[in-house]
Image 1 (cartoon, one colour):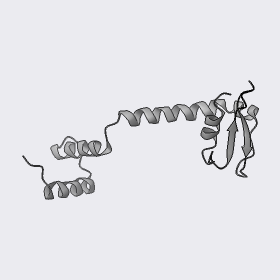
Image 2: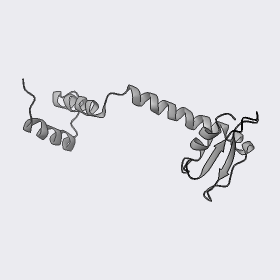
Image 3: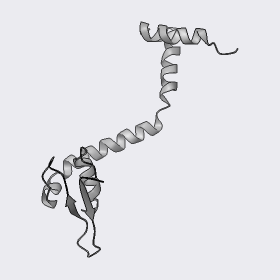
Image 4: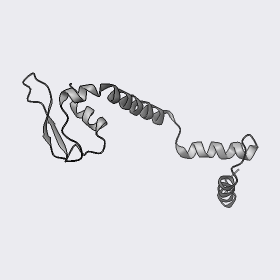
Amino acid sequence: MQELGDYLRVLYPDLDPDKDYTVMDNSDGKGPFIAKWDTQIHPKPTIEELQGRLEEYTIIKDSEILERNRKAEYPPIEDQLDSIWHAMDKGDLAKAKDFYDRIKAVKTKYPKPE
């Protein structure tokens, strides 16, 4: 289990790795281990217990990767909202009245120069 620190971060997101536990590797060929477990929130897991949660870890890790990749590809939220507003303004999208009216008021107050 080479990524023990990552396993703990993913499976115990409510714990702080700087305060609640310490992972070490003595470079003795045995790999990383939990050197300190200083929390009462969860009992200290064994390597076997963590290995038994591999599927859960994989699902959570995959969702983190998906979220990170999507976030990197999405345009800024300001651009997304502006596109929605313009689609509403042209009639391509039904107007969400409160959203549309509030944005329209700002755009009217501060028009773009032609």
